[in-house]
Amino acid sequence: MSALPLVSAKWLALRARADDLARSTRLAEAAARLAGRGPLVVHDLGSGTGAMMRWLAPRLPGPQAWVLHDADPAILSHVDQRLARDELGQPITVRTRVEQLADLPVRAFAGASLVTASALLDVVTRDEMRAIVDASVASGVPALFSLTVTGRVRLSPRDAADAALGAAFDDHQRRGVDGRRLLGPDAVGVAVSMFAASGWRMRTVRTPWRLGGDDGRLIADWLDGWIAAAVEQRPELQSGVADYRRRRDAEIADGRLRVTVQHRDVLAWPR
Image 1 (cartoon, rainbow, N blue to C red):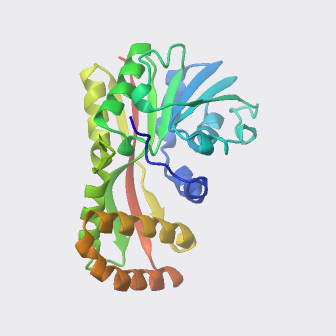
Image 2 (cartoon, helix red, strand yellow; image 1 turned 90 degrees about the horizontal axis):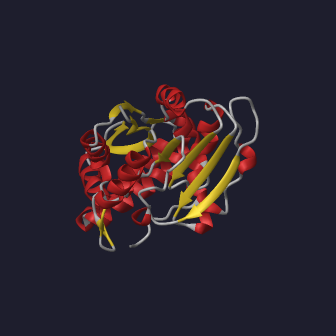
């Protein structure tokens, strides 16, 4: 099975502030109650450089041991566990595990207190989602999934080209990659349906990025990826992209462009 689409450590660092501002503290507090008192064992899927760990660990009691799962050993090399502390400021222990989600054993989370993931579910397949749900249910471990895109993007000021680019981007998110059909904006609905079928309870919360004048670099990089994906999906859009980008770059330079990228956080737990 092919790996998940790879991302760079540079991109993860650039988006970290926006991610942390967007994540649901309410669901994090609920996850902490479900996880119970320490010592805790937390499995973080598609962990990247450990951003979810650095954000969530201070909101959980200690002592804590985290297991970071990712298919990319290179990005795991950027994990710095010294930056993560529990709610009392004590260090946590970290292990890394290189593996594909499709290979996730059903007992992967045995003995765990909590399962987490960030910006992951929209880039997995239905089979990979099933593996995550089955492993969580088999071990009775609550799961907190952060920042799953929903396909809703708003740019202000609006532009006539926004709708076509947005629709093409959403289609690209559902594309097939090396035999893998990604869930894209449908991911939250699929996750909720699978957990519900297992009799679990769920809460979902909107967690949008709200980017403005102080986020010019992030907006520019996000716009690069958004446009590139849209044009890859619908090459006929290429003819208008240069003019569109010039308009948007002028708005970024003036601090006028505002971008809202909708996500949802999901908390699932056994009854």
